[in-house]
Image (tube, rainbow, N blue to C red):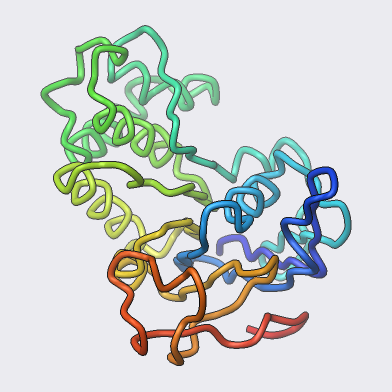
Length: 248
């Protein structure tokens, strides 16, 4: 079934600095979205609001399941997972780190062992399963964080620049894992990225946050600083008008 997220007139400022200015968009259930934008554009702020970790100053965020509004309670929070660039790990084994979210949900090892082993293989950490997580490299820790998020099978997975500053090897593994999850069509994936090539390869829809507005890729040339995104050439792609309530 999945969760559809509808945002309407979303605004957020930090002090005198406006970050989001009346954003409206509908993220359809079980689709994958990539959000482009320069540093400070508001991508991370948007993800934190969607994850119910921050409140907007004005505007509404609605979560719909089966066409019905979902209450913003603990049950909903457990269906949404946000993975940040800086992944925190526990001073236990890789396997125990990945299973943490399952344990606090009351699941027994016999019920999730196969699932965990599959994800460890997907992110290339099978041989590290008994190694202390704090001894992993930074790239391996990022892969561990993704596996820990995926193993609880969230209905909405929010990824804040999942491959930023990673080498090509780690980037490829993470992109493969995201693609695998996308193809199952059981999870809504919303990821921020600076890499337009990555966005085209992984996402069903490409968006951008520019001047506090959410815009959707239209095929016309991008403007301004967005042209500096890796894989994006002038004339290759572009932004439409800011999304309004009821569009998309």
